[in-house]
Length: 172
Image (cartoon, rainbow, N blue to C red):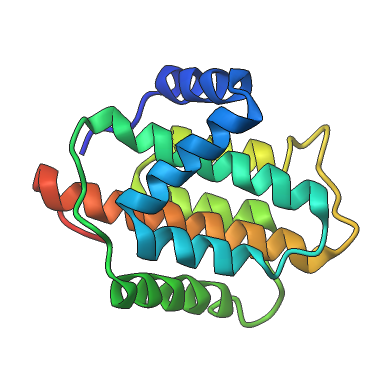
């Protein structure tokens, strides 16, 4: 499956930054109509986040990712709850596979890059959740960072696998 180009992701970022709060809410509600189980799961997952700024940042990242997967121009069928639970458990197992230490957000996201072959969307998530080597994002409540990272990875993997069903590529 062809990767979503960086320029397309940047266009979605720019588009969403320019929307009014009302337009963002309208846009978000469209996704609730199109993917009710997925959006309910995303909403539920992010309830664990304590910091308001990271919560707002995650909402924006989710919207950019959802918009970016429109690149393929293929309407998706509704992703069912059992599929969401399965992917969530798989990400959890991936995190737990680091037996000797707790991996950083960067390590988790880099591993995800090799799993799904969507370098630019993962780089976008890394930049917005981790920062850069020179300007790393620090969290007042460290578990927020891991919650955000894992839930963003779940979302990307779900959308990627769903697209692969239509494009004919092997599902992760």
